[in-house]
Length: 600
Image (cartoon, rainbow, N blue to C red; front, side, top):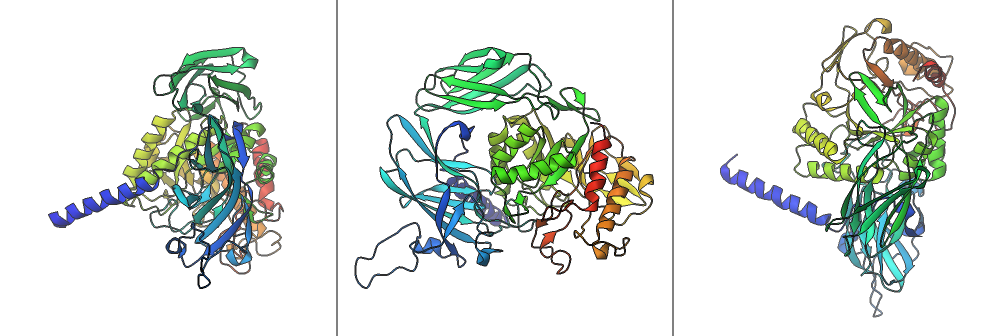
């Protein structure tokens, strides 16, 4: 490459980065604890226009001109357009859009009013994958990332009476998107979570972090951040049950450090204790339900509240199998979480992206630890100059929403990425350091599937394990890779042998009800074959040094376009322990028995 070409390339990278940052300039990470605010719900019926030809931007669909002359006409209109339920994916609501990936434009007319000494924000729980948002024909801004919330301040932009909100959603896969072009789940698109208008005082409590200091069982180390014009205010944090009324004062930037001691009843799966917490300043007051616990590793142990724990987990996708739609409601969340509890779990791995906020809160109430994960999945283009910035944005948004949920014990930063991918190691190591800087109180990991398996021996070696608290690996011995010897005689070489080992995925596919066929042949997709894989895996677990948890893939059969067998799959990944109709396969009983007998 010539010097001129290098200079041109550097300028192009600078221009692209500037464009990316400018496109996000108006999209704000949401304020903490949206549920405790004064809210106006915009959920319900929204008009919708699909745009498979991607001409909506050219036609300026956010503008709604009216014919002035007899010869005027326009080739789009929300008048007479079908209606979609929000929240909800468009794929499950319109049969013609079942597998659609592209732009859909949404419209809502909301009655809003300016209020004295009140600020207003337009909030989206999530839009998959990108969103352009317009209010009264003016663009508020854009957001990229299909699973985290964002907001726009609209205080000076609303008008008394009817206000028109138009949102362009687009779930097309991008080469430099996160996830990228290929992934093993249905790409549900649209406005998939709540839409609200949030009302706050002029100066409000924008964010806070109230959790135990790393390694402590009685010391809270946190902070509060105000937003507005009058920032230098006194702040009080109250926990009435503990007779705590901690007082501090924000500095000129609105930031106040918190540090106080108390004798807490600690949150755990056996006792999911939470406290009513009140945060007050001169102009604002909000409440939360917060639990306190310690999670850390010591050598090869995982310690919850200073005591060793064995993680009994299951993988879950954010899909209601019965409705065959993206899960978003409390009803959906409880179906999935109750099924995990019945299996015998103490942790749910919410794969492979941040699930809805109520899922985290319900897990916390039920005593389920949560593994929350970024959608940095397989073939990410780490060499693209924008990808590291996108990863950091998604990391910040994931942590910002759930950092006060004590149930979240693991931040998982990637899944099944490949060591030979250009810039992979540097990008993910930098991301790990960023995560530790933002939140050092939880475990951090990367999930790897490139370990070697030859002569019935595993070699665990990936560089990312050096920066992880857990050795988390996906292995499908017995399904994608045949056994090379007896499960009871597997040998292990682990380069980072002083860390806890966690089997984050294992399993096999089976069609529920497919029984009494040759049980020793994978091609029959029988329950007996899947059952035997589970029996063999459990036998192998006994050979793994430092094993501190396992997590089968996965709870329910789920929709995935790449699963093309017309008899056994029919567009489903069949590795579920339970069918999409709620029927338990034979392997479910094997795993349930293992968890029932396994001491925590």
